[in-house]
Length: 145
Image 1: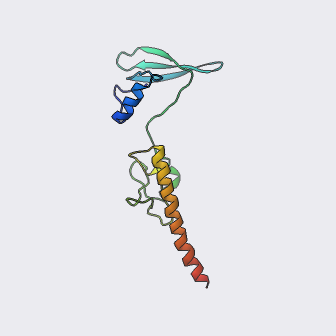
Image 2: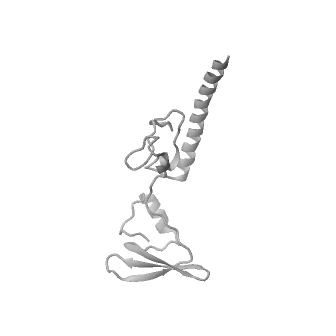
Image 3: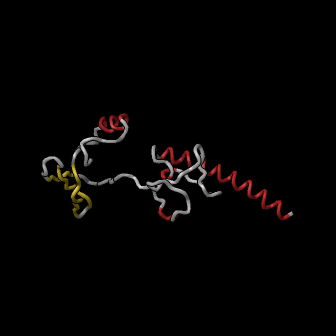
């Protein structure tokens, strides 16, 4: 179900989903209410955005995905973000504007936002952090000599 009559996902992802027999499509619908019984979810009440008619779609579970807002508010402006809240990193790295602070995954990637990208950039951040700490450990140790 989607509230518009078209999807924004890549064509290859749309084609893959449309070929999945387990997925039925209800476009141009707005969810109104999750219908629940004694044993859990039994359906979803929706409104057809073109006709205004309401219907109940039978379902035994609901997965909700509505847009994407990066979870960066907790930073309180301490790390530079763009107008949408994504952490700005030095291109090709995970480095932020704060030395020793690295960003990876969905909070800095507004284009791909996929699990594999998050895992890859997580590895990058770990390696950048290790390199940063190595430099500080050497510098701090030499000060004690």
